Length: 385
Image (cartoon, rainbow, N blue to C red; front, side, top):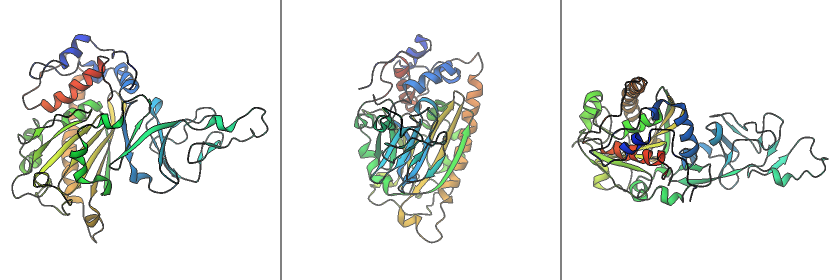
């Protein structure tokens, strides 16, 4: 289990108000969204635990390498002969990044671009130029720092701190929800990248409610009633719930029609609903009857977040000649941009010194799940696990 941590640099009464019982609570203190000191605290105490860093299919070939994140939690993912490994993205010589953030490459070794120290795909030191005759130099002492990594249904999760709870505790209650969609067997067909001028929590909070849907999502509301569904109560760090698809519709698209095929083995309930999951803290998973969409959030600053949206489909649909994923991609790109405009407006509004934490509506119990968990972390409680 991870070590205790100090509370976030926030007003204690404001944090306590966010943890009050639902119906009496308030949103997080304004500073949680605009203060760089709070963002730095989150990087140290929330994003240093189990965090999604991508999909295993991104590193399918031996020698594939990808850098994720910057700073204290920067990760280098490497596909070795046997498995994918995660290392701290720092050379053991002078600390130079082994690969620039979001960059990818492929090779039989990992090579630092500064002084050409090289490492095997398992992280052990392969060559340190001009050190062969240095007395007392022991190559075995200078391998890369390996990090805990779990491949869960095709998504890669890393614990940079090495102190988080067991991953099974982190996702407790979600195996039975996610497994029927077999996301590890789906094929990612399209991706969109967005850089948003908003705090990462604003995006997650928006995702956790449809109180706003009838106002800004007319297309979505025609296919999925905004007041339908319910949220789940589970033991782990993750949260989410389902919403219904109207009778006669097959999936979430502009017409309700599917251009693909249903995922095999789903129940009648799963074939007529969409499950929205917050893979705390940074993975949003939307489980549809015929595809799985993810939003992977990478916080860049207190008011800036990179989001990669990916759409994955069953192999029999993805490999069909002429398959066109636009029925899903275009629908959610439109919906995403409606959400992004709202999230960025929230961020601008929170910049006002007059902004104060508001109450939660009866339809915002999903927001409460997220906000109260973050507040618990801020208070010095379970930031992770």
